[in-house]
Length: 266
Ligand SMILES: Cc1cc2nc3c(=O)[nH]c(=O)nc-3n(C[C@H](O)[C@H](O)[C@H](O)COP(=O)(O)OP(=O)(O)OC[C@H]3O[C@@H](n4cnc5c(N)ncnc54)[C@H](O)[C@@H]3O)c2cc1C
Image (cartoon, rainbow, N blue to C red; front, top):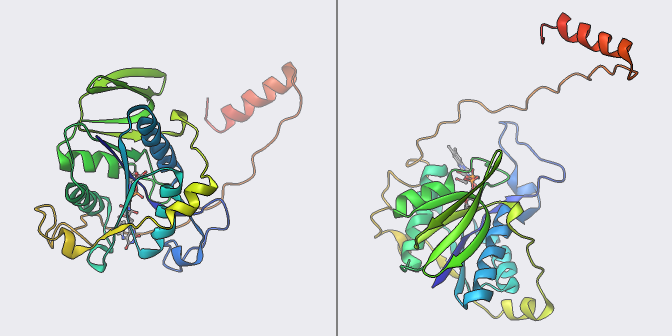
């Protein structure tokens, strides 16, 4: 049994966000972090390893500097790491990205009892499309917004978060789960893990390694294989300051109601 975790390196948007004149993110000038939801996905995989002794494999698609992030995940307890990287993959939208990652997972090998973990959403692209699309392309059952995971014999029982409650779902393996922060608290690396991680190699899957996959065609990867067109990109104008009404009495209440009525809100 393997737990395969998809992790994305993203710009750290908690600091100053650098934007190019054309409105795209200036990724090169910003520090990077592991996508927060993906840390919850990794923790879920490591918890499954603690419970079952399964192998944890992390896979990321991106440029070579993602190597640092992969070492961090090996230091946390992952057993193997793969970086899908190549010029041919550049410019991919979510459709092409999931196509390439699905091919990468096939190359790593997907067994009947494997579970693929993704984060719900990346904090830069923010679409939450990649996980579900990988599942579709691999023909796997999927559950998104997973807030609790239990192993039940050969199956996995998960709690899926809804707007107003939870849904309990039993899912057969192999399957794909997208994880949310409510699922767990990611563990810290320890010194021994950090030292050992640097003697653990990671494998690069480039175009040559994946080109024979039926998922990899010139019109399914990179810019050419990306059906999304960005027509325009802009920073939304800042909203004006709100108006504060003082008081908590009937008079203040009347003032609030007449303000709202004047603006045709009520
Ligand atoms: C037209 C177009 C062109 C683009 N060109 C570029 C470009 O040239 N360079 C560029 O960097 N980006 C580019 N992007 C952005 C790129 O498509 C997205 O960053 C990528 O598809 C992931 O989408 P997302 O961030 O919305 O992830 P989400 O769908 O929100 O992510 C959900 C989960 O999927 C998994 N996941 C997502 N991405 C990866 C990954 N790379 N590796 C491993 N797991 C992952 C993670 O588990 C993550 O939590 C482009 C997008 C478009 C629309």
